[in-house]
Length: 364
Image (spheres, rainbow, N blue to C red):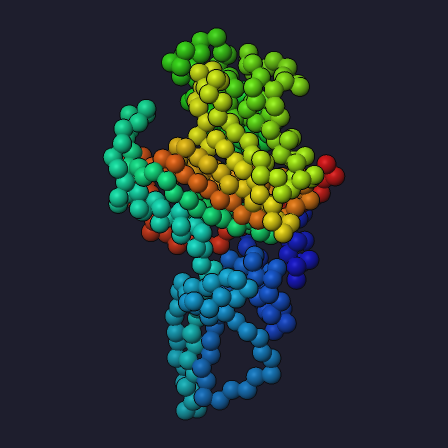
């Protein structure tokens, strides 16, 4: 069954397949409800038949809704209906159920948003919109088996997450390279008007200065403009972490930062997610992210996915397994014009997180 699912996830099939169903018999059901296949299930559709007379020869265990967990997954009933039939004096009841895996990790995000809206301090900010804010929070997300915490109660721009992260990892600072690919998340901060308002009149439009990627790969180098050659300049923090993970995975200094006080005036925007530390235990790589400014409605879902992907990629590059993402938040806030859409989001039931599948392996 696992091989069949991998085949259906291949490029030859994915464009034409929207949903994959697993429909018995008993041995197929049993395999579907065991790891690793059970972790891919988005729902279980179950019909329970209560008949006055019945005999069965094939049995397998199915999860119940509520607190019972199967393979580490807690299931909850989403829908149920019933039907009664009668024939020859015998009554048969049919119960139609849909069970979905309970996503407690997304629930912690939703609970934090709800808490900020109910209890947050009213704050003024540089945008002039205003926020509800709390200080100091933390969320944890499992990345095991390449599990990807991509929130399910709102749309997260996954392609944008991937393109921006690769842009960071290349040490790039020219936002036009993203906008040319349809990723416009930096357009406003790279505009001529915004750069001029920051006093960066010498920059070409869409040149963001020594922002995230530059600090990751060239920390401490003197920045001039986006298309200068910075090879060998500054500290390559990402390379240093990868090398240390391979040679001394118990090291306590495996971290990188984008917060360079001397370079902040040269940046279009100071970094919001600014520090990440890595930790290895039992062959698993975990990451702790510290984020100083946390836009819960738009930015944080994007940041969760981005650092989860980064951790999975670094684990893959160093022969480790992904472990956990620990997200520590400083000023966690909801913008006043996001309160209504966030309240709508809070009404939705989280689904299971997806898993990241690599279609091909790379040697380096």
